[in-house]
Image 1 (spheres, rainbow, N blue to C red):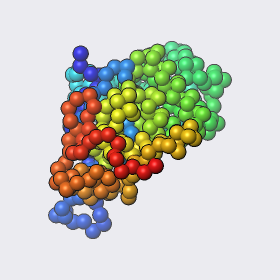
Image 2: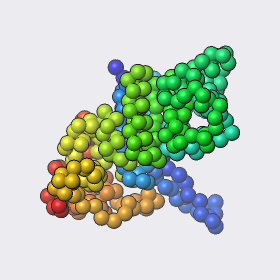
Image 3: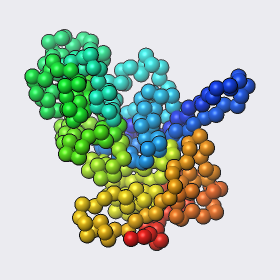
Image 4: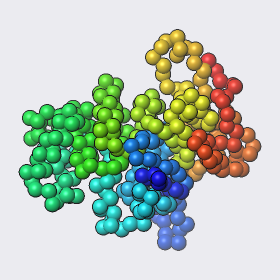
Length: 332
């Protein structure tokens, strides 16, 4: 059985134009996503993690043609989404929906809650009568925990958590098969984060959704994902089933990210071993040769500057020339 979504060699770059550039000036590019491959099965969740600037959100937007991308994005084993014109892409937009990072900014301030949730139905299912649309909106509001009397309120009258519930309801009203969540809880406090995560897990169980869940917080990703993919400077560093990646990370970058996650137990927090990672992420306009992580990697060797590591085949893929258990030079 073919995966619901299959991505091969996804590449996204943006041409940079500086003041004074002439038509003959050699173009400069910012390479945001470079050769990303993954498969996603129906009903499963792929967690995507990495620092700011690693290409997570750009990758998500490229999958659905919100930004220009090259490569192959195969939907249900049949259609390459990147080869479709905007007109031919429209029917697939109801099957792939997105929940954005800033819940308030993603809602139209001039529309009521009812109008916001009903808008995708009016766009993708104009054959549905207005009475039936109102019924579906009421049902979806109840499902995501919004009270019926809220239907005529405007976005500014809601809290951040409620606005995110509205965004989720708007995305799910057209019954998509894939939900892309672009850091949906990063702007919320911890208690509201837990509520939204539990809501997404419940909806996934009930509706059989597949999800791509993007986040900075590895503890959040662990709670909701079946497989986790770690990005750095637009490249895959490691990709593995959740249990394998968290229990036995092989890439130094993954180990550094995991070692930075706080442990609620004070004794365990003091005893944990810290993976050193110095410096800042280099500019994607001028990435280092070879392994893009080598400038911050405690295992970097001479060959890391010459060879671009590719993820190995198999369930636990690592793009590292010197992978292995956590670095022996850790500090407590």
